[in-house]
Image 1 (cartoon, helix red, strand yellow):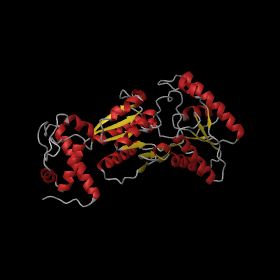
Image 2 (cartoon, one colour):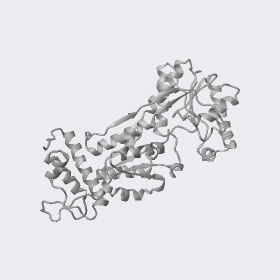
Image 3 (cartoon, helix red, strand yellow):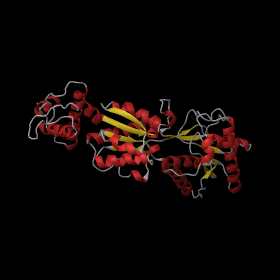
Image 4 (cartoon, one colour):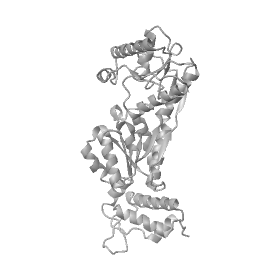
Length: 392
């Protein structure tokens, strides 16, 4: 018995089901080059869908080169010689990420984009897709169009590369070629794409509100560098919102580590001298901030860069967590770079739950590929949780 697909979303999902079945059958050799493709009726009966849906799926497969007509007016479709390669390409999903030192498969920390990229692979593959992780560090802008010229099923671009020429070119190609694309991040340049992002403004506001609730009024953001990325600016905005709501004046974000120094001190394996330099720089900024205002809490850019700030507080003869409460971000349970030099951790932090965010990214892209979403760009926000590590 053949079903009738009346709901547009059901029809779209059924078309994707047919198309995936065709691709899988070609890829595993069930359908071989030169053989006739299943007829509309055969597909409809085999998969329990309407004839019209099966016909539309065959037209999609023909447009993508998975099946062909030998003559322009021919009724039958056949499996071409290149069908296996086409099937693999159109079943593929590309994940573009800046892998850095994790390109060799070295375990990445939970807070990082490489960690989320690795988490995405099994989630996307579970939908029957072939997933390719592309390292933006090894790509040239001129290569992007050729890589995406295979017309993959979809593209996912991670946040650390989002403002780079690689990412912008990939998104341009996806838009022009009609390739579904999902991005991680909330940069203004991404407004026209499906995207998932972490609400850094809300997270920073949660931290500041907790500090205010626990009697802290002299809250100062101290970052290693001046905020520049959209997520850094959002964190400053969230802090300012909480301070204004409490009728307090927000302090400007102080920063202690110029880019040149950061490059020297923030290698894969920093030494004690490098950390000592960072602590001295943080100490100078902290002394200046205390000269200008009463400081009883500090917002850091993340748990890792809270380490030199905590060391600077100790250098002043003060107690981190009581005299000055330190707030981090990312809930880094083990900081691999600075642990050898400072054992203290922030009193509070934000866990971005990147596993859940990876799930959102994968599901949004798969839904877009299936055609079950409205044409307008969709936005989903990852969950965040305030984590208290030490009460003041």
